[in-house]
Image (tube, rainbow, N blue to C red; front, top):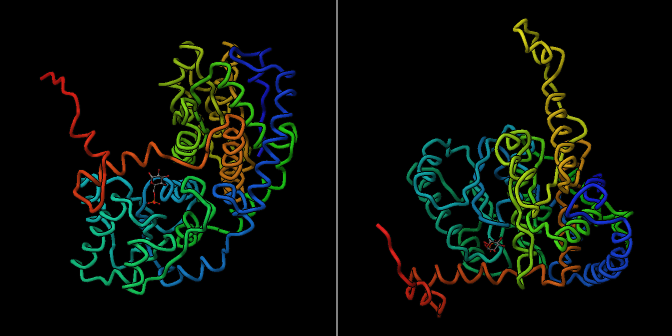
Length: 431
Ligand SMILES: O=P(O)(O)OC[C@H]1O[C@H](O)[C@H](O)[C@@H](O)[C@@H]1O
């Protein structure tokens, strides 16, 4: 993972950060790094996630998913941090296993998905750390019923990933299902390199060891200086730009396979840093597609946005056929990859020319190792930014409020005062 901060400097952009400010900030980075290292050493909640490249057990994961390793299709049932990591890997890595993520509870989508699946050859990986998330459990019950209706034994096709206890764990025990435990101290949005993200990767035949090796590459470089650690360089610079007015961070990967990565990043950034009135709003985008939609705003709109570019240094390529159509001959000498790179460089330069801050993150390739580096790197960047902001990176009370309110509205057992607030809603209906 490589991070170029040149276009975030105040000599280029406004808001921007001077080299002198970054050097001063480096003292805070050193203190934050010490805190992070202490948290990692004690396996404290959240910090433990940064140990996953060392602590995850790829052999145990592979052995547990073995009963469904022959699957032609895979449905990952989970939501938020229990879906987006696996979805990111599935979007970015080729596999013969057709992979679907059932996170939302839109009945039309669920019906369409279930109708099209070869159920007898489909694996289910149901993932919920708490084992209580309404969307996940409801979807699982629906999927299970579809298997039963088709005469397929769902217990033979299901792998469960969950915590030590809870309704999903009970269900798994009752039916003697293979279970992978969500490791302690690892919040969902930091769990891609654990059983949460890696079970699906193993079923798909992705190289789980290489994903973890990518994480280790970046972990090795975490040090007390942002000038020595690409992950910290990114985290510290986003912090500095946010403080100077870049309250929006548009994630713009230039690789089709990284579209879902931008979703994963949005959860990581929003749920971890959005608290105490602070936080940088992540926006999901894709290059070159969003050059033709969002870019106008980022170059000429309010000066409240930074852009994060992500691109692989190498990718498979395809030649653009020659043409004698007048005005298009320049395309015939190029490849699609060269065109995408030219679009990337032009966009980066156009933002810099307009004085708009942007940071370039590069990977060698979009493969298991590169993804392990990118995902771990962004997690470490986020933890650092959380330390610098002084927020509690690893909790999400605002999300829990909504979860409780929905439970209360559905009449779940227990006290859910949040549901009363929904019923007391002020009305101003315009028809
Ligand atoms: O894994 P689960 O317990 O089902 O939780 C799934 C998701 O639920 C909530 O929305 C949390 O805010 C997320 O961080 C979490 O990833």
